[in-house]
Length: 329
Image 1 (cartoon, rainbow, N blue to C red):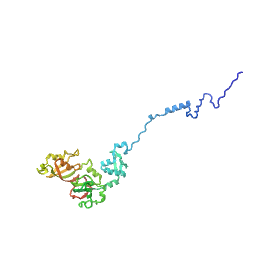
Image 2: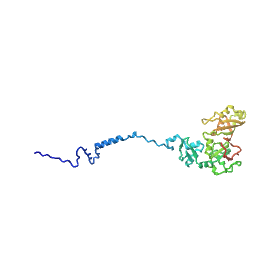
Image 3: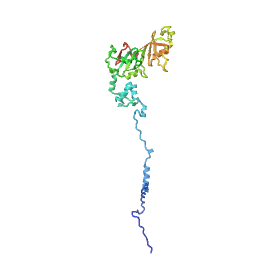
Image 4: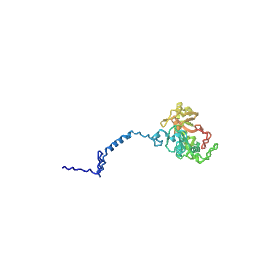
């Protein structure tokens, strides 16, 4: 009789069609367990639902701030330069106000040097800035020979040393009283040669300096110039007004160049036999003397009598007065 032997299943073994459990990794090999069919199908479904990074909508870039280092700032102009263009202050003065928080752009305080603005933006300044500006003075001097306009040089004193209480013109009717504070940052707005005399402007107000000596200044300066002919042959023919050829006088009016640049048209006419009247709208170094040399004239005396609407008048040599509150160049 045949004997049937029954094999026992290992304890915990699954019955029927159930999927066999994943094999445990061999300890120490670092291998990951193989996923089941259900896990693999779930992973494929999850990947299909993901949006690729390239397909995602790119976030909108943040609006750049108009700071000195921002590329967008190149679209505007420096705030201090714009203030100077508008006549609110000199660029140096504007920088000082910006640092103090006295400047607003479209109603917001701007205190960063180098900030830029667009031409359409509204700029306003604080009351403190207006008050400080109102305290600044402008001085008119009748400069004598022997004084230089700016810094001392070759042993000659600057014209600002003439601004003392003793040299204040007594005939001036001004509410201002001389103070040493008026000498602080008092600088010449234009030059007048050491051997020339007449009206010289010293100012603490950067707006006036820009108006008189800025690159785009159109303020007239009038001079009386005594001359003689450098050529002995011409001098022997009579006074310069007679002996100087007419075409040379025309060249003084227009057609000369200095330092490689053509000069702006000038008004030049005879006042008497030996004196010319010049009206210029520019001020190169020793310009009138060099112009005269180019046409054969030698300058023996030069006096500035007017700058814009301000005349030298009766101001005595070596004395000074304040620019009045209602006077304009």
